[in-house]
Length: 149
Image (cartoon, rainbow, N blue to C red; front, side, top):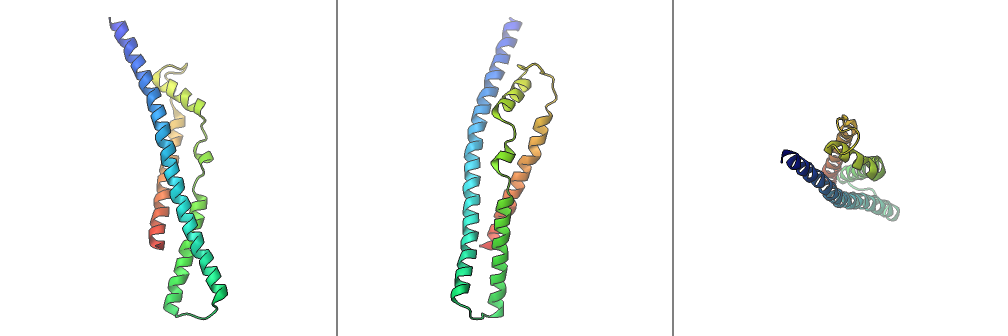
């Protein structure tokens, strides 16, 4: 009876791990889509401000007040910084260096299916800093955008 219970428990764990992978993949795709839309909006907004300023500057060459000129300069600096930050944001290819087969091998090793069930999973340790880097990068961009607006 104990052998049957252990085998069923392991089968349940394996099925749960696979289902978790599929669900995590779907959540990751939707979250990636949201972040991409947000970054695209911020980038387009900053570019439109810069383009509008350059077009206005070509049309109207008159000198403005120093106070409003200082605000305008600050706005232009923030717009350029935002565009730079969005372009420095890691692209999906650099974030997803592991392909699906590598992830499935890690999953199999974690559930004990693979050859190296006791293998120390050092690749997952290298993924964590990338995730926190993405989170901190998007938070810095959002904060800068709030200052910009």
